[in-house]
Length: 214
Image 1 (cartoon, helix red, strand yellow):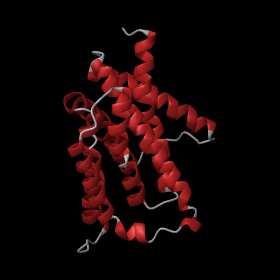
Image 2 (cartoon, rainbow, N blue to C red):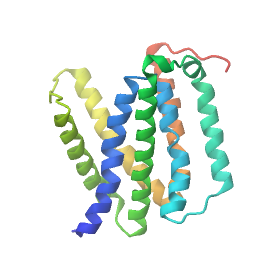
Image 3 (tube, helix red, strand yellow):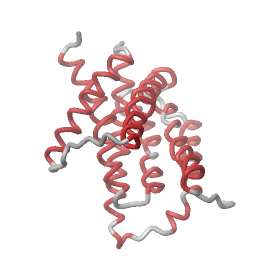
Image 4 (tube, one colour):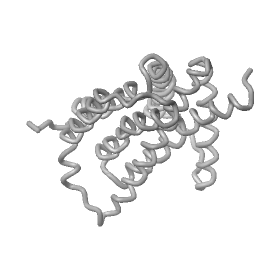
């Protein structure tokens, strides 16, 4: 049982992390190359460092900041072709705004998760309840946008659905929240740099992505 105040902070963790980020990320990739969106969302690393200092009084560690900048620089090299092909006139600016919003709210959820662990709230329970808050928020937004709620019994849909629910959401986020408690929100965010690289590995195997010297 949690108090209304505790539920507020669990919702502050869950709604951004499990609702707002996904909504703006998926809208972002409809306007901008997915690699660029992933790179912009990875600015969450920088947000975590400064929001952690602002709200949790965590120290801004120069080595952590330098590591974040090196990671972002490496990602910029990986996605340089998409950066070079950017055209503001194509409506891609909207995608950048969506990606920046996703990045900021992802950081807010991360800082809330760090705060909740400091307050002694358990990882599993806060993650589960937070996911319920995030799902409810997303459902309301979907209805407000006039989206239809459908279900596809095909194997491809079910496989994708199970992948998104179990490893990509339940396992990944519980582990991420636990990592926040162990090493802090600034260093835990390093994990976000791995995601696009992993995605490119999958793309290489399944979609014929070609790597260049850069």
